[in-house]
Picture 1 (spheres, rainbow, N blue to C red):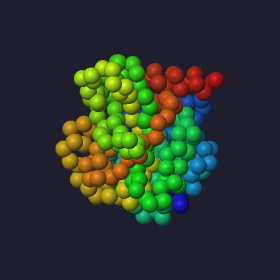
Picture 2: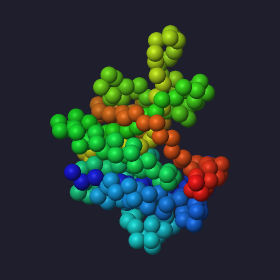
Picture 3: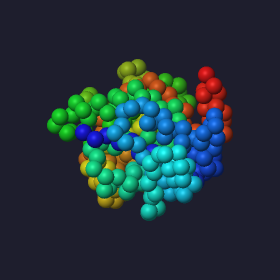
Picture 4: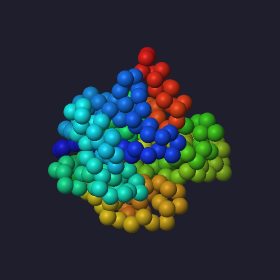
Length: 243
């Protein structure tokens, strides 16, 4: 089973311009994330896929592997699918390019899902963590997921799911953590399928997989990564690097 990591890396960013090329302890964010992915020793290969010559050159000039996107893409899955379409791989892990503090333990858990899935029932694996703060639960930027008894996703939403009509029935609220592991075939199916109404409404690409019957296995984690979306996030990352 050949397993690779792919870091989708767009240059443009609405909240923090060119964040992946910002300095983080003497290295750019994207280079530091790329090196962190390699250092987990979990992958047979690691690639950055980007629409930017700057990012492409940043990786390749340091001896790394990068792939230029040819097309414009609506989602990270589309960008990754284009990049891996002609690669001989079995499992593709989407590692966010703006999360340099990679949690190897969580990644190992999603990889293990496929190693144990002898009957190949799992199309994707992803992560979730419990949230208990009411503001976090109600925040539409925190995507929630509900799962069945076997840990497969039933639905993802920016809304509160399940709705707490009854308060004391032991419901746990789970936030989706955007680390994905795909079977290559599921990723290619996604690439060639149209966006439907649920995905368009919620602006959540994982709903396309569910709408077309793909099985997403969710793994619980307690890890909270630092995604660099703002200048404040960068300051947190720089402090963490000094620890």
